[in-house]
Length: 457
Ligand code: HEM
Image (cartoon, rainbow, N blue to C red; front, side):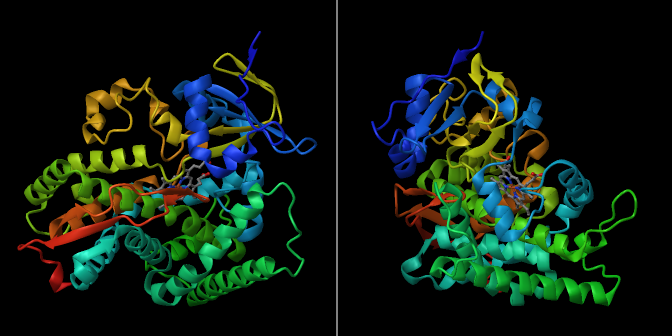
């Protein structure tokens, strides 16, 4: 007989709602510390109270994302909001529709395909480093800087030569969509989208502008016929299923918007914390730069260099351990199940959290300390598979993870070639939106390196 998961004590009237609303990440960490690896929260006023379960052990995460993925579906209110805002692309679709999409889109993310984007990423990194030559007081805030770098990189691989017409539209409108998904996804009651409230009107305008730019570019590419530019829009248009069928224009647009949603803020956060942590830890920065200089000897980083930069890769992985962009992932259970000896009823909201599991003392010694050498191959191999899962896992794992690693390593290598970094801000406050991100500045003071070649960009 499996046991009831321990209930996390909360407010007499509202349960855990205030704790989860005001400090979700803290509430999750405390819940694990005080109650163990499977916990239950009750949140909301009587009558509207919802139960939700959180699972923190690596084994439990493996069960939910991996071995029993079909029992834990992407069916909560946030996914519904994403579907209604930007269409039912790869992030949110399910069942037959999902399997077809993943089958058609997976070949666009093979290493060979993604490696071909390394030049574009390097160009964007070089342009970023070049912009910093005029930074006031030689100080930059890496939070907006990495947001811009990541936005331009993903927009460029998607839209290719149309990047400049797309990037402004995306920069202006995506935050509006993100804010709406989050606000509506967690609200106990939702106003219908058709009501002309200011928030609904703002979201509808943002959606219209994003749809318009995607639809225009997709129509132009389709009309032009065969196109070997290699950007993702062309590849999506050219993708064929086993029976020869293609994605229709709306589905191509849905995927483009999903890649923007899933591939922009996530990578920006990982890079911003990568730079911030290097700036705070001069020894690690020195070791990473020594590796970059020895391997690259001043030349641009390419895809082939990824495996030649193991220390920098450890730094990036450690940044994603401490600051996972997707700090919490939600599912809804179909049937009753048992996770780590605890009963989870069918129809429950169930959450797993890289934020908690990646700081779990069973898997990580001195978990809050920055130590890239945790990712030395022997230590990595000795850890359970799901002790570190910033890209999720199982059948719904991140399709863009190799691209994210490539962008992270090429970006950090290029910045290290050009500058030395010293942290201005020791602590960076966090904010949990659709993803976890830095809420405050993460400023670094830059010292230009004498051998820096970026000024020639
Ligand atoms: C550091 C950067 C990134 C992180 C931390 C990240 C994290 C994740 C995570 C945790 C999931 C699984 C979500 C869940 O199971 O609920 C996911 C899925 C996904 N990611 Fe990423 N991601 C990153 C970059 C990217 C990029 C660059 C792209 C595309 C260009 C992308 C596209 C997607 C897509 C399409 C899915 C859904 C896959 C599916 O369900 O089949 N991601 N990502």
